[in-house]
Length: 264
Image 1 (tube, one colour):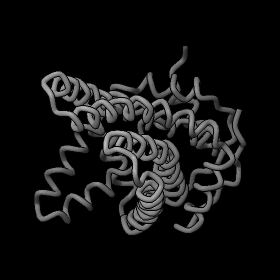
Image 2: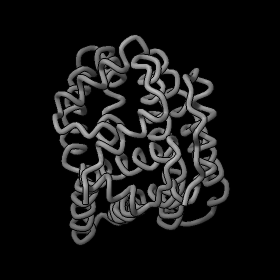
Image 3: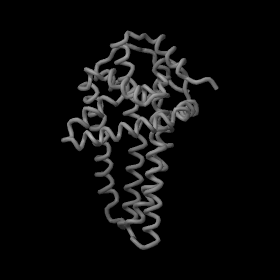
């Protein structure tokens, strides 16, 4: 069960950030649950990797390699799935529909391949842009920021069409996307730094192995808490741009989501 959010109107950057925090807090259990599904396995892989670094024996080197392989597979498969699930949950909440973790994950699973393929291609494009003196990569990353909402809400089955659609929605609004994502990154950095400082003083005197494990666990908890924020803000940006550029109202957006959902 989730809190229903039906106040739908064009928003400033400040309004989007404020509404993102309110949606997160009002649906805290749902967002944390979806985030934990991603971050708990990744935390386990990180602990395996950290354990291997403390005592680099032959056995631990094998554990490191296994942990790294599992981590890469998790990033490739789980990250797009949870991104899609969080986007689906936020979309349903925002247009006033009831959503559960199961329904959000089911929706993301149906589009898992499209999420994986599109985000992989976008990652390659942005990487090339970063190598081209950084600026093009940043601009392309901003232009493709809405690929997950386009896939989950509009149900497009063409990766190139998803990228084109995101580009068109963001056109003329890169600055707004940049400010919102930068604000979220700063908040995440501040929270992470605060936890690191607390860990530094709180774990003083423990052995290097125990201290490293506890520190990684704390960082994992921060990731679980902060992961949903970006997906929430990006989904709200999608709605804001669609309303501004296409004049869609709440009822039309709700219908578009229903038509994009495959029948069971």
